[in-house]
Structure formats: C-alpha cells, structure tokens
Image 1 (cartoon, one colour):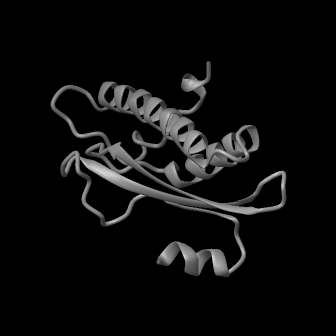
Image 2 (image 1 turned 30 degrees about the horizontal axis):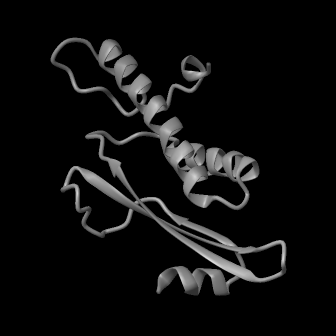
Length: 129
C-alpha cells in the first residue's frame, strides 16, 4: 500500500487529502486517507488507519494545502494518538473557512458572476472565532 511506502521513508503520520478512490457516499465526496504509527505505553506498536469522506466544493481555492497542513499539525498536537479525531477537526476547520470564503467571493464577484482566483483566496481572518 502507498501509505506503507511513505511510512518507510520516515514519517509516523501520513495523510492523503484527496485520493482517486470512489466514496460510498457518491461522486460529490473526496476520500481522504490517513495512517499513523504510534507506540503504546507498554512499548507495543500500533498502526491506525482512517478514511474520511469529505464533501466536494465546486471551486478551486488558493491556500487549502497550507491551511490543512497547519491545522493537522495543531490538532495532532492536541490528539497525538487519535489521527481520526485530528483529521475530523482539521476538515471541520477547512469546511468552515471554505464556506466563509465562498460567501465573500460571491459577494465580491457580484450577481451571476463567477468569483476570480484572487477572490477565492482563503479568508482566514474573518473565520477566526
């Protein structure tokens, strides 16, 4: 499996944010895959594998990869042995920021106009709580 090849290169955590796999929920979803090697308190090794179905958004955004990486780093710090929870929280933040960005971009583009790439640059400041 590709995840094992990536683990063999050194990282204990591997996340593929959008694969070509088909989601059981339909074509409107991306499939994200994750794998994490951890060591339990007793010294035994454990491998956690996860799969998430993420709703697709019909737009191309600038900055999603950077934001995903930053959020995943933050959430794995809070949940070091629970990759699923860290990824779910990361995806939740991503969906929130993307929805805010779409709302802004549609308003900036005007009625019946498709937003420009500049308008689709992620709007993180308005998304901070």
